[in-house]
Image (cartoon, rainbow, N blue to C red; front, side, top):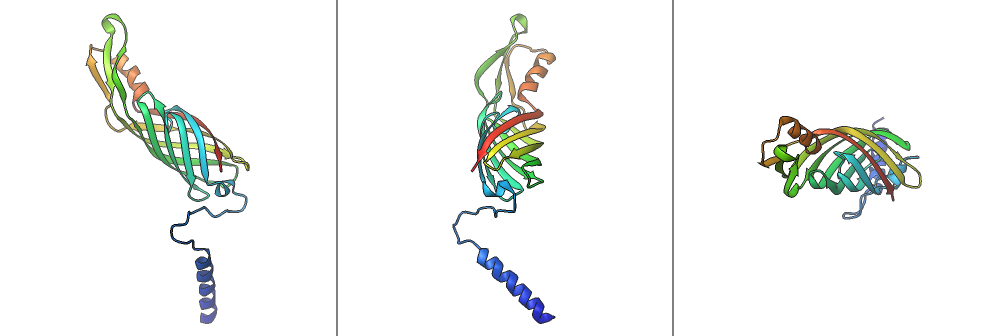
Length: 196
């Protein structure tokens, strides 16, 4: 019995050693059955929507394994140029999969003063740097030839105040409308891309 256990352990160790990659070699997800994601580990695409990863812009993603994906985005938003990083876990290996994700977004701010309202209700303001924590869920489809579409919903939490009033005395209703555009709020986005 001990000899058989030792033989099994040796066989498993040999198989693992044979699959080990050379130092410095690119790490590629191992292709798993009919899983389309492990065969095409890089993704380039576009995403747009309310509190989306890049605002409206480009996304580059890397499949680490058939379930886990790292995403980076750059684009434009109501908070100025925007950058985002997100980790995503897909539950299935089929073409369609639901997923959960968490990320960090940063809007660099809107340079120069902006004006809102008219007449006596007019006020000037500035949008400073805007860090967000984003928690989302969604669904993604990836076809065998690499076409990708994803739908995402969730919440983005502003981590520090970004609205600076420069002049005027805005009513709370004016400020609440502005905060809805540039502060914490729901996430609703769509993404299109290609995996290779």
